[in-house]
Length: 203
Image (cartoon, rainbow, N blue to C red; front, side):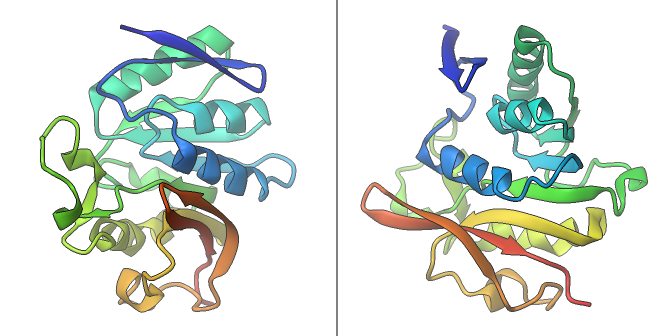
C-alpha cells in the first residue's frame, strides 16, 4: 500500500519493498544540502523513493537518479510527478549501466550504501539482503568508490555514509581519494554512530 509523507513542502509516496526514508537517509540529505553552492549536477546513487532527488532538484540541481531496482525507479517517477519536479531516473547496478557521456559530469555524487556486516542480520532476501554491505560492511562502498571518481568533476565531492571505524585505506585501496577525509555530519542511530563524509579526488 502506498503511503504519502511530507518533508519540507515536498510530498513523497512510499511502498514496500523500496528502502524507506530513515534517519540515515536524513543524515545524507543534510550533508548534501550543506554542500549546495548555487546550482550544479548531482548523481543520487541508490536513490530509492527519491527524497534526496526531490530536495536537490527543487534547489535547482540537475539530478541523475540511479537505482538497480525497477520498483524504486517507478516510485521515484511517481514522486517526481507528484511534485512537478524533473530529474533523470536510470537503472544501473552502481555505475555499470551509466553511459560514458556522464564521465566528469557530477559536482556531487551521493550514496547511502548498505553498510551492515553479513553477520549482523538474519538474511531474508527481500528485506535484509539489501542492507548488507559485505562480510565486514564496507565492501560495497569500496566497489562504489572504485568507479565513482570517473563521473566526478575534478573539484567535485563524493558524500557517502560510513561507520567511524571504517578505514579509508580499506574503502579506497587504489588511493584515488584524498586521505584528508571531511566529516560533514554525524548521527547516532540505534545506539551506533554514522558519519556522512566528503571525499575528493587526489590531485
